[in-house]
Length: 290
Length: 203
Image 1: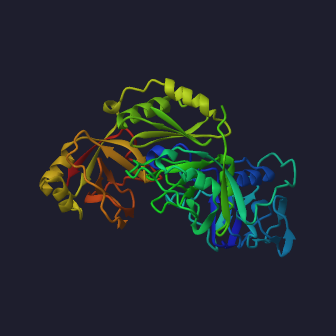
Image 2: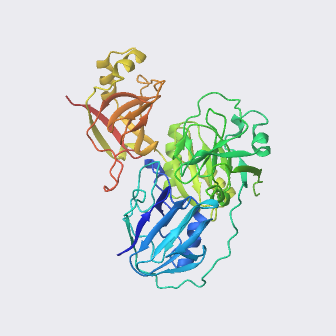
Image 3: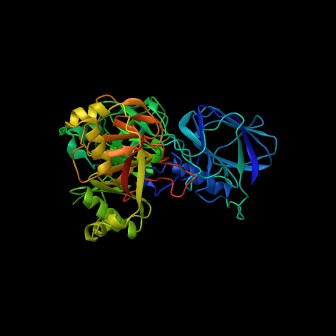
């Protein structure tokens, strides 16, 4: 295992993420992992890694790192300017970063999170089988700081078959997410689900890897008793006493005590993870199969 | 039994009581249907977390409805003694709420056998239940921003031990030096579903 990448500027928040640590809910450990799992998988595929290799998740851009040896790097996710030693480079493309060169991600213009995959994978010590930082549970490596040196694993034997993947840009100001009703839609007033589906909800600044707190029309309840805490999934729209929903992301709590009116389908949770504060979300009802 | 889908990511199975949750959890843990990533037991529900690319939600629902809940195996399971100094800030309040003296609260807490029903809240936090209901107390009206690591607490029908310093709204009756959670230990959590617990008073 070799030192591969020295962080010069972490930006707002940069963490190491893979696909998380499933299977430990019974002892209170959530899955965590990349907030936009599709973008992590794509970065790894382009770099020739296994899809679940660890990469750096950068929030809102502003990240810089120096290659400590010749590296092959892929950046996916949000739209942001990329440069290597000041020369422009592209996202969703296999990039060579020679030893000593500085890789820089500017501020994101569309979307929120980028994934920086390195051929060989970021090889920090795993915790309970994963290299992910769970910000809620306080598990995994510390968020990256200036001076953090990331080890990179041995390169895989396979070379990536392609050097570029065409990816649609994340939308700039409004995002449509597919949901299915429940599991606790019957705890809400008649019309609450219609309100959720017929309104725009704004992404507030109180949003992080745990969840996106939304502002918009209230979703009143009809049942006022306390719900015994129950298991939660990523994508759940949990409604606390404020009557405004919180959309759970990768580091959501294992269980929660507020009712969930609807759940964003898995494929769209990745899109939600790219939603920036100030952006508006709309929800569309998808029918169940069968 | 009610089965409530959580889009394509989960199936929430609502059961009559904790004992049914425990039995269904034990049965499905032995042979999880394909596409099930994780089982999340709670007070009245068992959530099956699904891999949306692999899970057939309708088929898994059929499996859940057909499965024969396992007999409780709690008597074969591991047991643990937790030494406690009963000097918690809410001990007098718990005594007032239960109509017992503080000494009787301690006697009750150490005198019954507790079982870990499920985990949650934080890594290594286990919800402990027992057959007696004499220590049922509500959560504090105001949550504390800092509960120390090792605090032994009560809320509702449950007892628990805070595995690390965190916010919390449970009534604190004591503290233990035992490390409830260590990531470099296998298993990392001392309190896992099914583990039987006795609290023992230390001076």
